[in-house]
Length: 367
Ligand code: SF4
Image: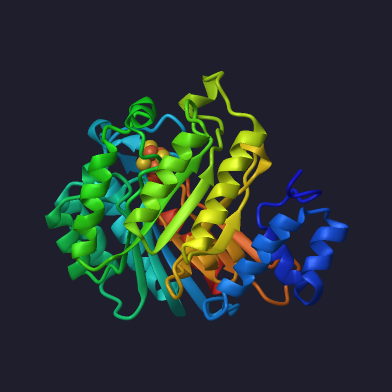
């Protein structure tokens, strides 16, 4: 197996724990392949200047668990926005949580509004969320604009005015047949159009692709990777298909072999690094095709701070919203990372918002 005996989801975090001889540790003790050890080495190199392990540092996450439609590979807790009954109540509770959570942040490193697809919210509600977070000049501020069917000029302009610096425009694949199969209600041409629109506003752009999608072969993946590269986004993340409980595609029988997916992942590494990108974060999950990994690539100087902090678990994560998991890092304690996960169910989240805020205050007051 490419990752040898490693079962954890954060190989680079483990490498940092053995920083003086991590290459030897990974290859000899953990039996990680030389190819994957080299990826880890390059990530550690690329994180220089961004990596900062300090318990006063914090990232601020806001979760909007709604999307225009549900993707067939999705296992997140996200509902179709057109069917959401208690959207306004959710935003009322979320705005309260955001306001009460802001004082818990010491040294703000980055803000990330994810989900879900935050830009699928009706504009007045999106404005309330952005207003509650407020403007934070000089801080990296990312919004998952994920689906091109939710991106328009007005939304991008609103994001810009609130100080957002980075948006995600996610094709997943540039093959229209696969997009239809995935239930993503948009074409590859829509992604390209909205990508350039976002560029006009000066955002850094994160772009996600998935290797090993049902129905795709190597040639199709190569086409998507080359297409994404031609847009030259600041970041390209290559995910390996991971079908967990709740994903519609899990029922599908046509899966690619580990070798085929591995060929895609290798092609991405070779092509992107030759084009000036560097791998800068990586994580693994259970049920990943070929037991491989997700790797984020960046152009020099454009690494996403939020991704580095979260993957390496080197900063507090003050997270707001249903299913959001806050993480406090405690030095000198037996358990270094202590988590609090808010309820997944929207109705429960709304009903228990006072208790949730109390739990979070408690978590971070001891950090
Ligand atoms: S856009 Fe993301 S969160 Fe929404 S349904 Fe698709 S995969 Fe899930």
